[in-house]
Length: 152
Length: 141
Image (cartoon, chains in turn yellow, cyan):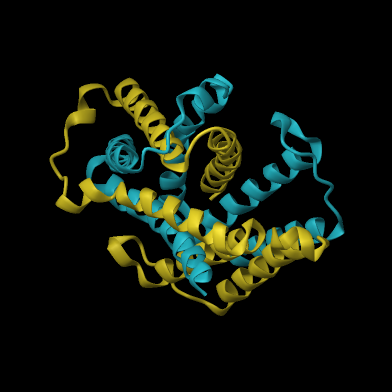
């Protein structure tokens, strides 16, 4: 469990850094130019690591299913929804909802085991844990800022 | 109302991305999954870029090179997230990931690192992080 926890923490820290770096790029160019650059860099890095750790095996895509090829569209959907959501609601409210929705969907996914992932049974304890995290997100995001700041 | 829907869908897509990568990695391997999804996402974004043409060459030259390669972190992010989901499930992975993400953003904001605008954090932000960590502990123990 500790290994899974550490990996998740590492991923979260990198997401935070990446968001800041991407915002810096976005300040100077459009959001599609930024998205293209970000995904292009991600592809180059994945290809490099893949070649280092897997060698030629990287191109062995025997069990590929057709929908795997369009799964990259999800990332494009993320960018469109976040951009439009933030434009309409402002960053503070939009990101609060994004975070809560992320958690809610995670809970739903675990309890249903969709796409053949291992099912994690839904328990009352899990519900309480998630609700407390949601409370924390709301306090963190909406607490102690003047209403003016929240709106803009 | 539309803003709410977009924000909600955005969050759903972020989780779906992690789940889809985990599923794909079961069949073809984790690095393969990262490479394929980033490549197809890149091609799709490029196509949209060619239509909307919102690029700004001059602007890009003013960005520090370090920030331009930020996207490459996705390789490590995907690998870590996928492995974590396989080990501890989606809910726990996303919860821990969000806490680390908010904690680091919080640190960067209060210290003004990477020349972001310095923001003072007050008691509610500490309480919020405390609640989130308590929630994750309840989730697993």
